Length: 100
Image (tube, rainbow, N blue to C red; front, side, top):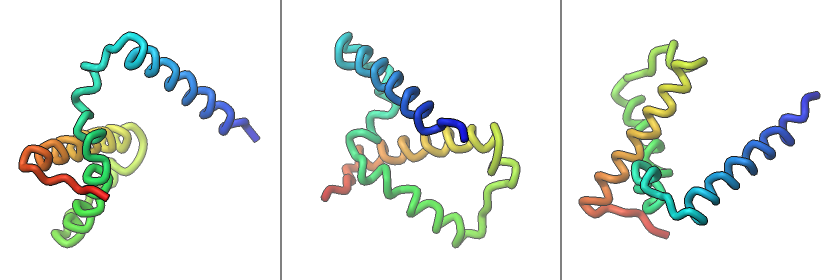
């Protein structure tokens, strides 16, 4: 059995160390402005897909099968995540923000 857990943990640690150097040590954070609404309104960002997917089901809309696997599915996931970030940013401007 491949040591996938160890490989993923190593990759995660390396990426965390790189992001730590970039953001905390060198104070270069402008690149993250595009996803900043997800960090400021985490609960809102987390719950929006749980509202959108049932609305899609009620409307009878389904994703095309080709967007459910492989590279097209990966691209769809990235685009959907950025749409959710954009919606979260719009809700922040209204201002609607969920808090615990």
